[in-house]
Image (tube, rainbow, N blue to C red; front, side):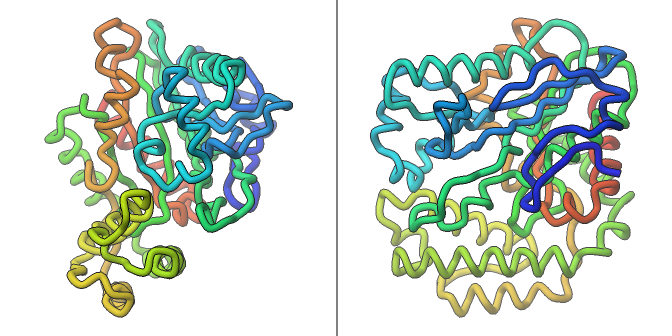
Length: 359
């Protein structure tokens, strides 16, 4: 049974009565909610607002904030706001900056929301904190810049984060934060990112252990996983080709860094499955995608597509550890399809990973 309510796109709507038998609400505002377990050892944080910077309702206090990015300085936020909506095509902003603003008042309100969010992450008391930083709905109208806005939702991540918080009842001995994300790309079911603070050999050893335990169980939805990628990748490749005239990342102009990043990710994911792209033609992509039919889905990887080391730097996680405000942190990217269809499997694997790394 799911412990949260989510819409048809997988966006977080709130917790249910069963979850509230174990957890109490600490805060609820238009941008995020925080719940603590009655034993004080576990925390669940789910974002309700959009991660897209110009998808917001300022009158209602609902802001477009990416809570997995660094709070900008005023000048940076104002420049970001001035360049919207075309800034959404530039990875300079998307990869590093939490929000945009058009006035100092707007900047101050968004800064306050960002700082309030992280006041529930950093701290000195032992606690396991499960965070779904991109689980809010996206209401932005589709356009040529962001043609598929609902794909910006990290779908069904709040449900898994809540499930992990609910079912993992070990006493917290240190302060740990685990971020849960989801991906439409053709990766593994789970990818571990160590934020640049977790030993890579340890991550790889845990990935090998989880792969052996869950490989057979994970193949049940393997064909659907590949079909989901086929539909998603084909849609994006067609859009990018129509808009830019090419699928070769080296031929994109300097403003199309988001398109370049998306194509590069698709190429890297195909390589994980043994399919190499050389000419970047639509026909080559179609042939590579169709060749996936008989390949098994690898269950878990570490630091392959989303290592999170960049995010670790911009959030200053190492600094927080030195200050005694955190012991460690882990980033987990999950298959959207498996989050929606196999939540128990995903919960089991994530809790095994948490235990292997930190308990």
